[in-house]
Image 1 (cartoon, rainbow, N blue to C red):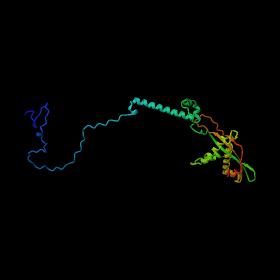
Image 2 (cartoon, rainbow, N blue to C red):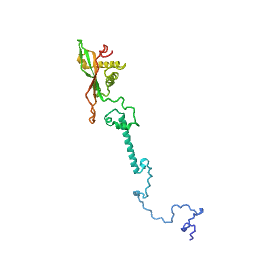
Image 3 (cartoon, rainbow, N blue to C red):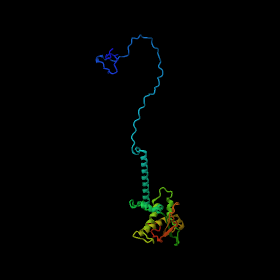
Image 4 (cartoon, rainbow, N blue to C red):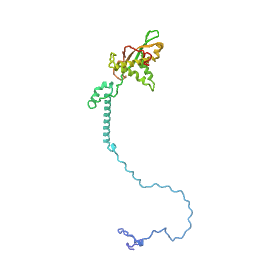
Amino acid sequence: MDAYDEGSNARHGPDVPRRPAPPAQRVAPAGPAETDVAPGPPEPDVHPGPEPEPVASLAPPEPYPPAEPRTGIAALSPRYQVGVALALAVVAIGVCVHIGMTFLHVAPANTVTRAHGEAVDDWVYPEFEQNWKLFAPNPLQQNISIQVRAGVRGPDGMTQTTGWYDLSAEDGRAIDGNLLPSHTQQNELRRAWDFFVATHDSENRPVGLRGSLSESYLRRIMVLRLDHDDAVRAATGSSGVIERVQVRSRTSNVPPPDWSREKVSTTPSYRELPWWRVPQDEARGGVR
C-alpha cells in the first residue's frame, strides 16, 4: 500500500504530515461497536459491592500564592534592623530625659532640684526656657492649723477665758473618711486665714482697704464656730456670752521623707493675733 493513500488504515511516514480527509469522506463517530458475535449465555446477576475508596491523587500540589512584599523595618536586612532599633532607643531615652528635666524645672523646689539644680538649669537654658509654673499656687510644704480662744461673760458678770480650740483639727476629722465633704469644711477656714495674711503685715496691721474686711470675716467665723461648739457650751454652762476672741496660727514644716538627706526643723511656730472685741450683734452667733 502506498504511504500516500488516504485510507483509514494508511500509514504515514515520519516526515509527512497527516492530511485531513475531504469533507465527503469524513465519517461521523460510530456508536457502540457492532460486532457479529453470537449471543452467549446470560451473565449472572452480580450484586454491587462497596465502592472502592478514592485514591489520593498523585498529581503535584498546587504552588502556594506568592507572599506579600515586606514593608517598613521588616523589609530591611537584619543589620539595618539592629541599627534602626538602636536609633529609636536613643531617641526614646533622649525624649524621656528632656521631659524629666522640664518637669523638674517647672516643679516647685524639692530634694532633687536642690541637689541637681545646676544640671537642670544647664539643660533647660536658654533653648528650653519656661516662664510658667506647673502648680498654681505652689503646694504647701507646711502644716498650718488655726486655733481660737474666747473670753466669755457668765451670768454673774465675770469673764472667763477658754482654752485654745484647734478648729483646723476639727475640720480634718470631719473630712477624714467622708466621700463628700462640704465646701465649708474644706475651704472656709483656710481661705479666711489666707485672706487675712494677704491683707496684713508681719505686725498684724492691716494693709489697704481690705484689711478691716478680712478681720471682720475671720472674727465672725470664729464666733460662729465657738457658738456651735459643744466644748464651749459645756465650759460656760450654755449661758455665757462671747465678748472677745483671739486667733492664732500654728505652723510646722512637713518632715522630709526617710530617704532624703534634707534637714528641716519640725518645731512649730505660732502667730498670735490681738484680742478682738465682739460687737453686740455678733455675740450670739454672728449678724442676724
